[in-house]
Amino acid sequence: MDNRMPMMTMVIVILSIAIIPMVGMFDAGLRAATTGSNYDRARTLANSSMENIKSLPYTKTSPSGVDDSVVEIFDPTSEGPCPVSVPTGLSCEVETKFADATLSTFQDSPQTSQMQVVVQTGWGGDTDRVTVTGLVSRSSP
Image 1 (spheres, rainbow, N blue to C red):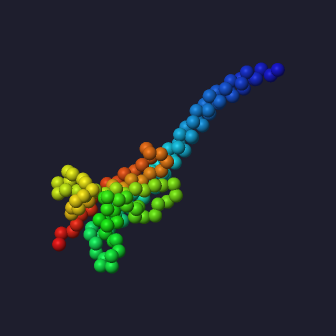
Image 2 (tube, rainbow, N blue to C red):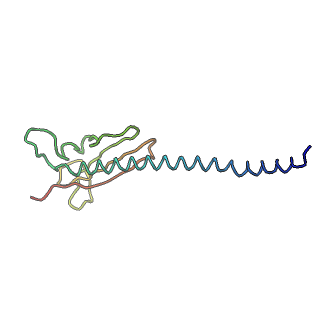
Image 3 (cartoon, one colour):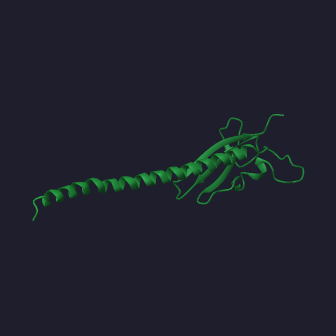
């Protein structure tokens, strides 16, 4: 028997004790990177959806009967579609409410000259969500 054997055993034990926690750190790092990536994708979708909604006219502009305004497409009494294409693995919901002049009351009706828009995007479970809130209003004549 070699007298270096106990020393080698001790080195192996010390290395094992040092390496095993590193595996957990790599796993935690991978989870954090994945969550950050999903958050960035959902945030980008929410912001681009909000900008798309804000670019629409507030009230009907097309005489042809096509729904082309925020009030028509995102009527508070019905669920509106996400205004941009939703990538695989993400969800998108748009909720609107009419706002009073002081922005203290939000309701489904009657129609006012401004509307609160809430875009919620998410991935995974109910807690994995990004919410963007904005206000759209009728332009002054």
